[in-house]
Image (cartoon, rainbow, N blue to C red; front, side, top):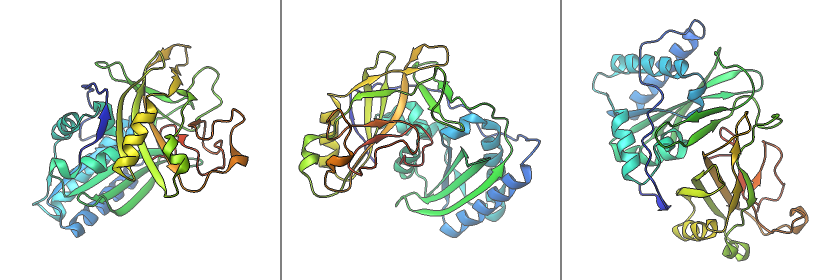
Length: 317
């Protein structure tokens, strides 16, 4: 799949972890069980080439995701010795060739989009996410050609993750960072996600009746500039083109780390138009459509308004 893009620069981020045989003092039985269940589900798909890839939540405690992948690589051949694994090097090369930033390798939708391009017939995604009072290992099995979810299996895990402030994972070569949420996405003393100052939807969307949906990945530099914009999901090519044109006028405040320093961050932005405009829910500024930045539950109720979801927010694609 090809991605719409403007002003792209390539990054060469090193993948934070590689498959290994590693032991975690707790939660080994639960992770072992999940890997064995996924191996059985892979067999049901008939896939002979599978891609196993982590999402950004795995950066919080890479040993758990490494353990799952190591167990899966042992379990799959026991079920079907003919199955082969797509290399992570091939995945990263494909992502770069399609105009994406290397850090996008952790994005759920990007992985679904490129899985078949690297020769995979099935995709297994893994992630770590906070679920109320515990962290959870989340795995999903997709049919690579259609992007259809075939199976979802989760397990409660004990982790080494501490604190509430998000992890800032910085790619040393590009200088761009991913912000990985932990247990909360607001209420920090200093830390701040990129803040949208002015992010209007395409004007044509305000007159549009049909549902429109576009997801973008972009870099917000430490000066608040928007770079490396890629459409990773769109309801139509026209909607993607209109969105890319509108983004030229967007303005952001940069992310701020816990020391008060601005830094460049790679983020996901979604725009949705699902119903006629509802003026009663519009912000006081009067912008009829703008990106709303904030924690889960803090967004305006109007379904027309686009939203920037912090990483790991359930509203992201």
